[in-house]
Image 1 (cartoon, rainbow over the protein chains, first blue to last red):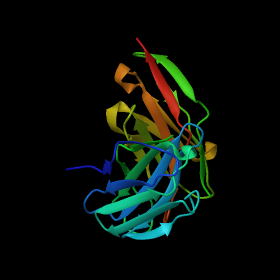
Image 2: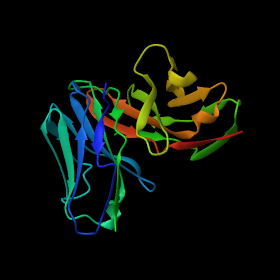
Image 3: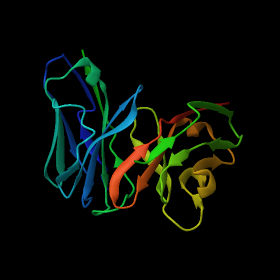
Image 4: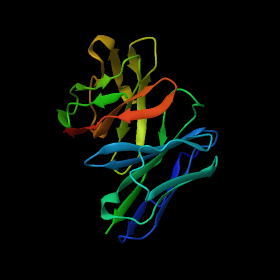
Length: 116
Length: 113
């Protein structure tokens, strides 16, 4: 079975440009998570969805960041405009657990973003 | 909110030696506890998890972890380390009825030949 698929794997862009990261969760998983990983701050939860509905976006750093999940098989994380401090590895993860509780997270390989 | 502390940023062990990675959590009730491993350039992979029951949990790749409520700890162990175990290891804690999983800062493991 295919795992969580993220694209692009690497993105280099200039400050001020719009960046869109994409994620396809594992089929049948009900929850989807976006994490950001940096040396300074480690793994930070940005936002998660249950059944395509955003549940908690308190980790989204600021209004420049937005995330959508139009259907069960696709999610995007958008940064507009991008800044150098957004440089990080962004991970998408999905989980089969429905609603309450915490289940195992299945991670994609990440999208490494560099903003010049 | 729950939190996780991994006191060791970097550990070096010789191949064949035993390994213990420390993890302490903070949460008022029984948490869900996880250990993940991340190889360079890869996402995180689950090694093992504790939800309830037996406090000694077996995972993949020969790893085990023991939940000690009195010490708020969930240390990861392996009796004999292989060179392929070199990676970053993350402890994580989740809570019932909440998808907010918090990760520790990670422990980077180096294996000497």
